[in-house]
Image (cartoon, rainbow, N blue to C red; front, top):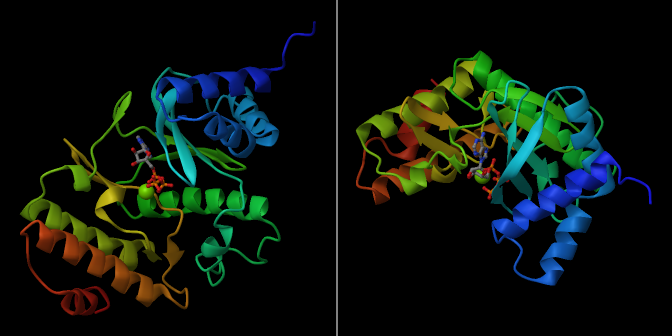
Amino acid sequence: MAEPDESVKIRERLLRFERESRYLRRDSDERKVLEEVFDRSTMLAVEELIARKDLSELRGVVRAGKEARVYLGEDRAAGPVAVKIYLTSASDFRKRMGYIAGDRRFGKLPAGSRETVYLWTRKEFKNLQLAQGAGIRVPAPLAFLKNILVMEYVGTPPAPAPTFSESEVGDEEYAWTFKTLDALWTRAGLVHADFSEFNIFRTESGPVLFDMGSAVLSSHPQAQEFLRRDISNMVRFFRKRGVGGNDADEWMRVILR
Ligand SMILES: Nc1ncnc2c1ncn2[C@@H]1O[C@H](COP(=O)(O)OP(=O)(O)OP(=O)(O)O)[C@@H](O)[C@H]1O
Ligand SMILES: [Mg+2]
């Protein structure tokens, strides 16, 4: 019998990680994941990233969400990296359109769901680069290919760093949050558009903002609307935690000054 090719082996390993982490509860889950996440083209892309030495190993699953799965991987120096694989299934690519159309970095809109997901992946990579260039602490973007993004691992493997939602937060985190919303807008020319306590890691060396796929340029027609929503989310979160300050209108004025 022929030796299974690399991409089949990669798929087998990823599936094993998912079983071990009990993300797959039913047979139907397993089938769905096989079809939607570990499709042949995704596995070939993983193989290609390994061939290019942007990745050398996959070690396990960190988090399985509806839209993306994040794996712990290793770079060629055996350092940990986070490998985010976006699902290519059509589920909510329509929702993503509003965060692509209107961003002048991306000309013609993609025709299908697969192309949309590839563009989304590239967009997250570019957004991370822009934010990093503006001095905002994000996971360093390392490589991307098709629906796969490789970035700095934040946390102590295999555990990711806790997010604000899982941590105690106080005045320091409050100050960081609004300084970062301001720096994104004024220095990076970006709005995150999904800024929330679930998308900020808390680490010993300070907070790290992540999940930047939805971020758009500040020239996007809805940029101010997204900014306003990001600000409101965070004002609400800190109020619930008993940390207060300006209201959303005041922060809008400060940032748009
Ligand atoms: N760079 C990273 N280092 C370590 N863990 C990460 C990294 N990026 C993401 N993760 C883990 O994966 C989870 C989901 O990542 P992310 O928010 O980027 O994806 P998502 O598509 O929004 O998923 P969800 O809908 O579950 O939030 C994070 O909460 C974190 O546990
Ligand atoms: Mg998220």
